[in-house]
Amino acid sequence: MNKKPVKNSHSNNTNPQNQLNIQNNIFMENELNAIGKLPEPLAERAMNLLEKTAEHKMQIG
Image 1 (cartoon, rainbow, N blue to C red):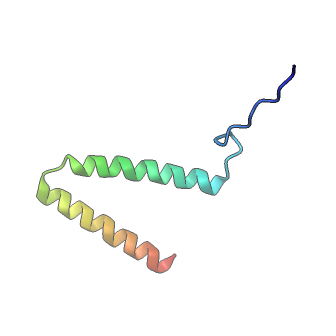
Image 2 (cartoon, rainbow, N blue to C red):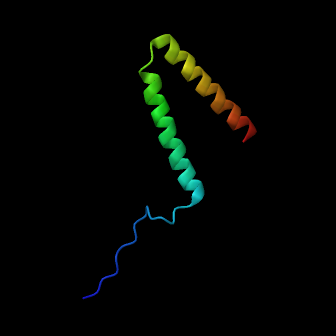
Image 3 (cartoon, rainbow, N blue to C red):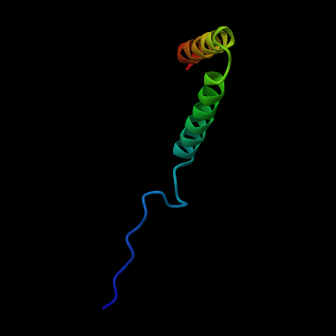
């Protein structure tokens, strides 16, 4: 009996925008992990910078 393989939802035909979003999410996760290892005052400053950057991107996007 010949069965067709089930197409994987994570195939190589991924939408480029989705691929970019995935890469951005991985990058952000890595950044947050790194920030979490900083001393508290530095971590707070880094988080404030990320928040301001995100707010700015929301305003122009």
